[in-house]
Image 1 (cartoon, rainbow, N blue to C red):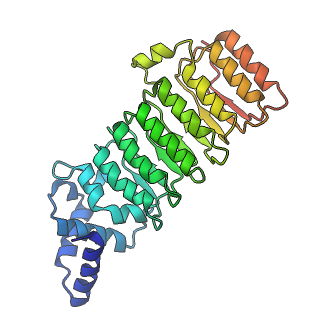
Image 2: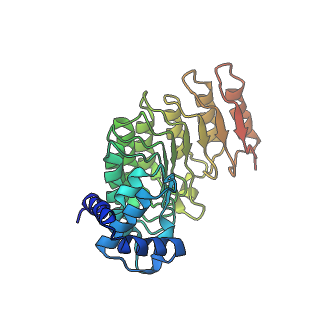
Amino acid sequence: PHPSKSINLFHCLNELGDHSLVEKIQQYLKSGTIKEVKLSSSQWSAVAFVLLTSEKNLDEFRLKEFVGAENKADHILQKLVPVIKESRRSNLCKCGVTDEGCAALASVLRSNSSQLRELHLSDNELGDFGVMRLSSGLEIPDCKLEILRLSGCGLADEGCAALASALRSNPEHLRELDLAENILGDSGVEYLSSGLKNPHLKLEILSANATQNSSFLTQMKGVFSLNKRLVAGIEECVIVLYRLYNCGITGKGCAALASALRSNTSHLRELDLADNELEDSGVEILSTGLLNPECKLEILRHLNSQ
């Protein structure tokens, strides 16, 4: 049965005094053994009922508490959609979520009654298709998500295009976007930059870096096409914190950053440049932007010229 119908059924059972199924689920949850038990559809409905009617605050849903040999992440997400809708934060990191799980999450994001504001999906094999599915929910104006973490999720060109489209369609709510440890590629970054240029965008924190052992990092050494294109987006949108650690930034990249800092439309307040190869020449170029009266930067972190 549909989870909402089953929850209504459990309300009726409670009135009749039949608590056996609910009590069994409560025991599984209390002992932490629920991840070891293969649950039926009715039992999953009972899990949703117990979590939704518990006195414990549903501020955060932690998927790891349920994932085990008998219970895979995607299946759990499909069964506990009502619970995720009611949680303010969902931590699904390192749980084996795939594009199938993203389809369930997209239904949560599309719901105008969803309370979800933070979605942590880092270190899952979502791939472009998963991010595309997720973006189908992000682009709906009813989606109120404020924080999205997609670090190490196998994001590339098509996923970036889908995210950019979502940012253009629904720019009012997302405040933080973490795309670190993904091989974005030149095309992917161009797509992202097009989304960042939306004048109504409320994004404040953007994290993007290259994976150390990727060919992408080698490719970007001294070229900085990734960051230069994103800098073009910075000049037009309200990003307060910009993390560019370990991106192979050199003097050429500093010239693009200095240009953004000089822009009177830039709202950048904090810049993190850890683990890059700026050298003295790069720092000098960056300083030309910092000295400009139009520069609004307040915090500059990890300016270690190697």
